Length: 129
Image (tube, helix red, strand yellow):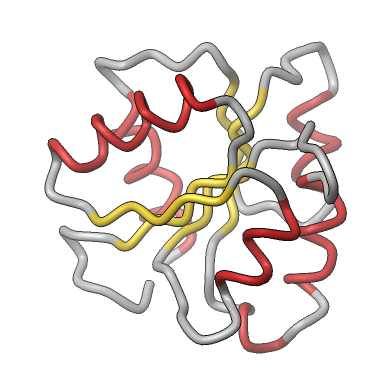
């Protein structure tokens, strides 16, 4: 991670406003900074001058989905050190393995467990450090 071990800058890519708000509140309450994008293209545009410590990426997004946005990020060496965690409603058998095989560093299913959410992100980041 590029930031401190205890505080992160998080890019959350999600098209549903209620989901963005919940994630923002949970992360900000824990002291983290949250950037938001409502689709994959908006996320790529936002990243043209800054690096977050972690990206939470929904998979089913309008305009440019999370699969393609992650593929593009993984093909750009500037983002090699930025963990990308799929935060998705894709929660069927095999989805986690599929996600991980496409360049994601972690997988979290929606709906999220608000009592464990930040700790789940922390555990993924620690495992990738």
